[in-house]
Amino acid sequence: MKLFYSPTSPYVRKVLVVAYELGLADRLERLPSAAHPINRDLTIVRHNPLGQVPTLFMDDGRALYDSRVICEYLNDLAQGDLFPRTGSARWVALGDQALCDGMLAAAVSMRYETVVRPEHARFPDWVAGQRAKITDGLRWLESRAAELSSRLDIGTISVACLLSYLDLRFPEMNWRVDHQGLNQWYDIFQLRPSMQATVLG
Image (tube, rainbow, N blue to C red; front, side, top):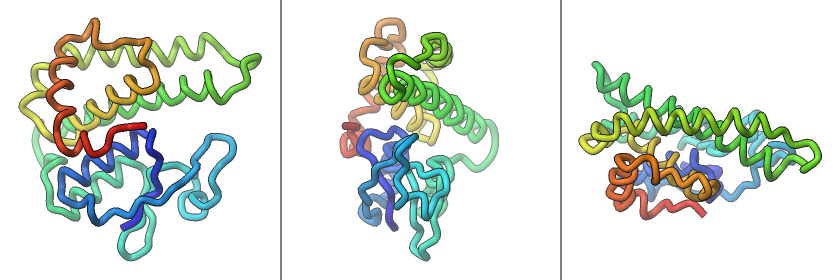
């Protein structure tokens, strides 16, 4: 399998963490790419009309995207249990993944607004609105932090990849100060070999 890759993408990291947890990392060849919201990488676009990472080539050559689909494919390929199959555990894990993906979308949007968009065209109210999604999401996750330590699934992996991206791109948010439960959980979770092998940057 081959994976269009960016070393700073939290969505790519989620795929890689899943691959390590499932014992599939050695089967993934990482393809360099230059995904960008304006100057799109046509090498990716030829296989993924969105031109985004991650994009995975399965062994038969077909392309899969986005991270949610790729992660579920890898879990199915390895007959893993990172996606609970039935019951409340499934909906909790998928709900956490959806929340964290939405928070990441807000964070990436903030990043584009403040780095890619020309300064004269930036919209501070837009940035504030995206930041509010992140702070509200962190508050929600903090209220359930005690539940995270008993789980290893696509939901907890998504939480960890979100927090690491905030550390990388928005250290000024200093999310740990007001979220001690999340902080304590993340300090332990980030020591997993899958996390250590996929550090952003």
